[in-house]
Image (cartoon, rainbow over all chains, first blue to last red; front, side, top):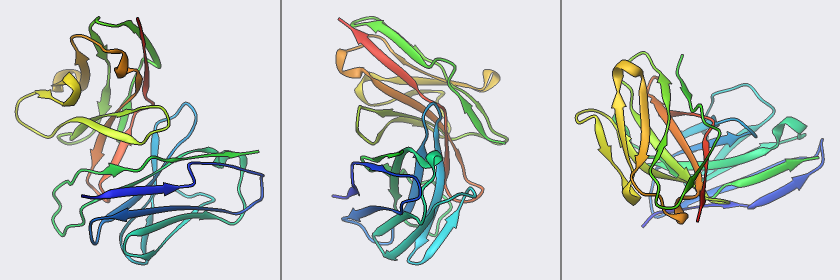
Length: 116
Length: 114
């Protein structure tokens, strides 16, 4: 069966510090991977998605970047955190396919980031 | 533009009472609609989804939702709430124009009192 892991679970960082959040998926190959952010009082917003190694698309301009150095590893980074980067970050995966048909996204447990 | 509105930020119900969580969407084509539940400190779990066909959709944990195109709504219901249903509930619409981008509402927090 497939599982998705995120770490750390919680993180408190000062403004201006770097960030690295990791997401890994087990039990599947060539998944599509997603990073979402849930800011306080707001719904989840898609930040990045990836259909393969080193293939990253950004949905919104921001202070963050993403990388996919391995097939089942998705990393969210920042060189200098802003207060507005605080939120709950969720990684998700779906079965990669050449079809345009929808595949269900499965979410990880999330990382709660507080920037002070 | 796609959007999802959940007008109720917080709802409190008694255990055993019925529940209805509201969701309105805006989408140019036939929507793919979802309800997710998020327990404290957990990721999202899919409760149910609507793609086409029968407008009344059954999900897990005794939940159901009804798609009403004329009202652009996809309300979630449960006839008898259990204390374990206390969580945050998110409605989402799928945008397939690029990535399978899920547009989420702001969520409704459900509190269940004994």
